Image (cartoon, rainbow, N blue to C red; front, side, top):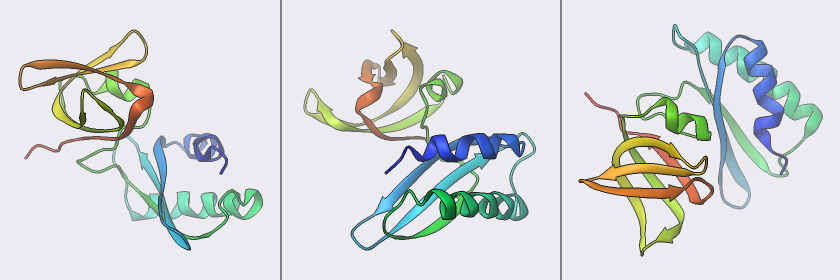
Length: 148
């Protein structure tokens, strides 16, 4: 599968939106392609429909996914997923949840206060007063934890 971010990011940003990220989930036979967009004034259904229309055209031409799937375009929401290394500097001080693909000291799940990026490759998180430096390349999934 091609890097889907490279296909969609230029188009989404040319339309005046922030390209937050993309993920493909699903097993054999059918999956879901989720594209997250944002902008300062927020995102509504019409925004998602416009992006969906453009992305569908790209998918028809490039055909990067070789199985059936549903396309979803949405705002990142209150539990915003983090995809880029720059996201970890942007949201310093926020509560974050991280799941590693590779265990660090026997642990894969971390929830704490995001302290940013060190050495251009380690995400620093304070979990109950203990500081962890998590390799960015080992992060399988990360998102902000919405506060009410």
